[in-house]
Length: 180
Image 1 (cartoon, rainbow, N blue to C red):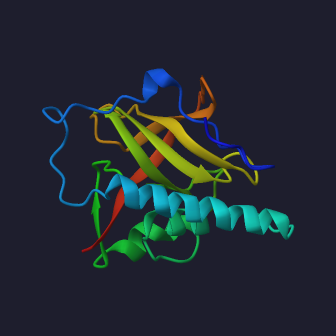
Image 2 (cartoon, rainbow, N blue to C red):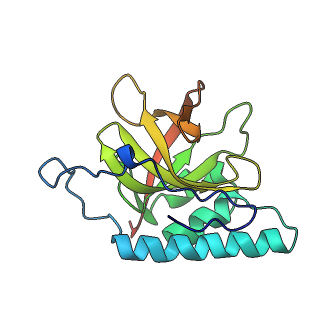
Image 3 (tube, rainbow, N blue to C red):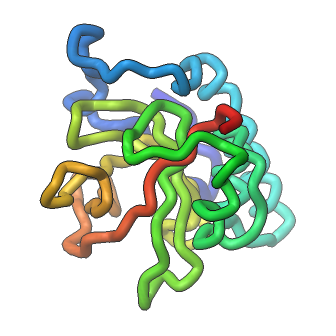
């Protein structure tokens, strides 16, 4: 089991969700990040979040996603999709290491960003992100594609282990850490 640093939520995913898709069913990818690199980046992002908390600073989704993914975009999450155009590969296909870019909503005016940590199947992934729960880091949380066309334009998320949100969130798509 992972050690849980004070004040940060870092529980591992439930065992039933830790299986990955088989290579036969895995989507072809030229943009996915190697697991070791993603682990290293995520550890750095968690350490940076811990340091901010220790200094009494707020932990935000944007710096966490930037550190964990290697996608070097700044500004509110709602601007990442347009900023990524021409700089990074964008798609509606999740891949390990890609940033899932949430569109703004009435309650989430600045948008949100999370990093794909694992592909479970074509409609379910695990994500790691910060500040979904105020000032906390959440690793390997479930995200489910609930879009009518299976295009990852709408998702529901695990808010707490085993508890899915009832709200559906709009997604711009996935920003891959490879230059466009």
